[in-house]
Image 1 (cartoon, chains in turn yellow, red, purple, cyan):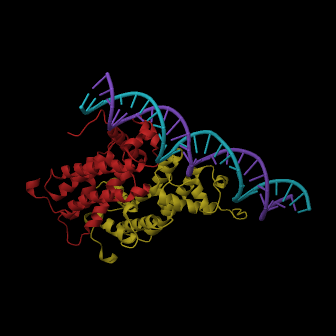
Image 2 (image 1 turned 180 degrees about the horizontal axis):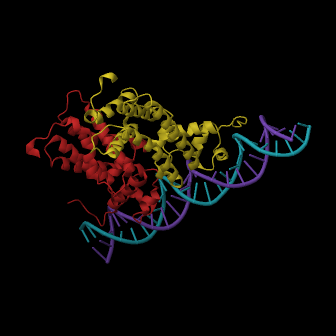
Image 3 (image 1 turned 30 degrees about the vertical axis):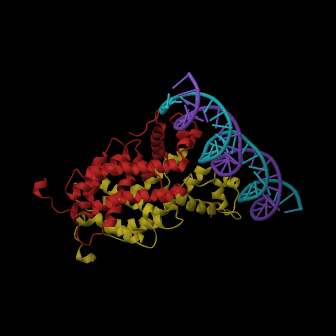
Length: 196
Length: 196
DNA sequence: GAGAAAAACAAACAGTTGTTTGGCAGATTA
DNA sequence: TAATCTGCCAAACAACTGTTTGTTTTTCTC
């Protein structure tokens, strides 16, 4: 539908920006590097985006969308709440620890790094958090359990993996499994025979 | 003992750098801002440190020392392994979520942000990690438990708190307690009467 | 109080930063 | 084919970056 006139390199620019922002952070990426990665001159970037922060916001928004879609799709392949959560975590980690994924930017770049866009970035993050809050809400837990703490703990542990993870050893899938198990060992009710 | 010539502004410089690096990260702090915070001209900084990265390394090293000392001291006030871990986590969080603490820099600044000093920073981080590894090693756990995963999960969850924590609501102490409990619910053996 | 050493200033360096401007080739439309 | 619009180039902008230099001020030692 959309009028795809000639060749528009905005998408390539977004991809390159996602990769670089995700790897090095906002401030470590110069406009020259961002544009140069798609063989464009720095000034040309401003035809597609009004400024550097706007480019970040675009990447960020796509990042939230992509990881949300992946997580939702993964969760919806399961029925048991605990397995839904585990599947979601695995999808989260896979997006986070892969290469050149938009989702990395959402975790890596802090809203405060882009002052003029901070509010929008925070809103985007929150919308993603809400998704996990839903998954946690569905867990059958002892009444006293603080679900907010559980969510913050799990998500924090996952996000921090960006810091120490090196590909090869443990797969994102396995890490997600381990983490959820560590949390759910007691809290999780004994699995029913029908689900084994 | 040490020859305290005049008033030592190197220390003030370190303090200011710790605060700024911790709040904004390495790249967001210019040498002018760092020096200006102690009413010094940018060039004067180079009398005390050969370059910006060396200043970071100095802050980083002090950060690791301070948080290590705090964590060790806290842990040594307890005897039960689980309570030692919880106390350590509380101390870790208090250093991390306070204001103007050197420890924040250690968590906030990634070694890769300072390429020429990356190796030294990583080594410093690792030495701190080893401390927690020791605490986890002392836990009485089911044989199959992956202690490395447990450590990475707990430490990641704690470190990520820097992202979402806002003072006032929950105290660092309470957060640490919640997180350790979430982990230990099943794994922790029933507390003996003598420790109640 | 003289001499030496320590600490800071003042001014510049070359390079990089994000951004703006005017123009130009090629595709699209009439 | 003429007119228009899209996408990008080329070149510059002022502001800022980390760092170096020579000189001056402050402090300590004798």
